[in-house]
Length: 152
Image 1: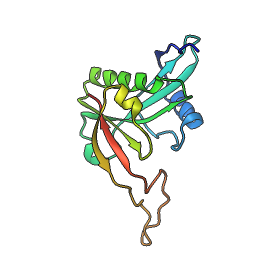
Image 2: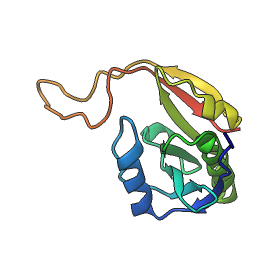
Image 3: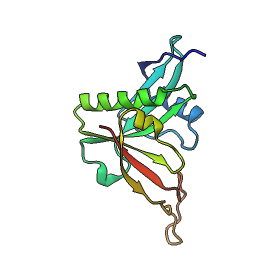
């Protein structure tokens, strides 16, 4: 079996969101973004996307930090590692000093390690935003531990 050769391609916001909607395992497309990038095969078929935006955690939104808010892939090997590396190079080229992302408990982080990222912290599960005094509908996974990663 031959390995699929991938190359980077620009991806419009609406196309990246649609790809995430179709392929992401547990999250809907993100609301906003600064940029997105894709990985395509030799025939030009989009195989994976990465969406980069402002950090979700407001204390990390310092103007010099970005977050990879979503990656999605059709399962093509090495696509996510290619995109994590490209996202960091692009963020640095735009003047940002830090790029972060999270993985959920049970996700190996192999793509991140393959792109040279390092673990910054382990985050405990979040209880969610709902309380009896302020009812809320959670829009993402809650009660799942996460790992915070940083590009190097």
